[in-house]
Amino acid sequence: MTITGGTAGDVPVDVPRIPSQEAAERELSKPMYHENDPNLLQRGLNRFWEWIGDLFEAASGVTPGGVVGLVAVVVVVLAVIGALWWRLGTPGRAPATSGDSLFADGPRTAAEHRAAAARHAAATQWNPAVQERMRAIVRSLEERALLDPRPGRTADEAAAEAGRALPAHAEALRSAARAFDDVTYGGRTADEASYRRIEELDTALERTKPTLEPAATATAFTEAPR
Image (cartoon, rainbow, N blue to C red; front, side, top):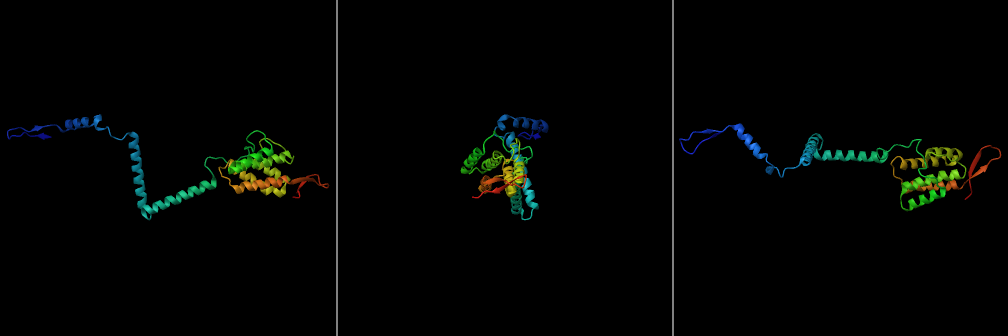
């Protein structure tokens, strides 16, 4: 860097370039020049959004239809994810296993379970309503000695055992057990229709009376007259 004087007789003065740059950098590094600079988090966010913008721009350039085509692809992907979420339930929920007990709390009577189910149904809380009604069914069968009381029994096991004794209701019992498992372990959401089906099954089983057949050693069950 050369500085000349104002008259013809002045001798040019050479100022070294590197020291002048260092002096300028020292001056600009003073805090007074950086009071309004974004902080580390803001800089990171700015870099992130710049990266997203570059990615979006690059993707729209290779997608048929440009930006509109890219948006359509994103919407389709989100719709597929939503459908899978609804079909498979909430991620992270473990499916029902043979170790999942039907009764999670202390012993209650069938009438108490029915009353709890009715309260939940009145409040349109269908998940706990389905759970309590299924528990009422199994507890009622135990109270009537149609099932042996057994701690740790699952809904599937109870349905299978009751179905062997009550073959006319075997399929409905399996369906009720699946509904119980779906809302209890599968992350599904029950509706009024699923609850009403279990309620009707409970009522039908209450009308089922055991009848001893003289020619057989086993006990058979028939539908009592309404």
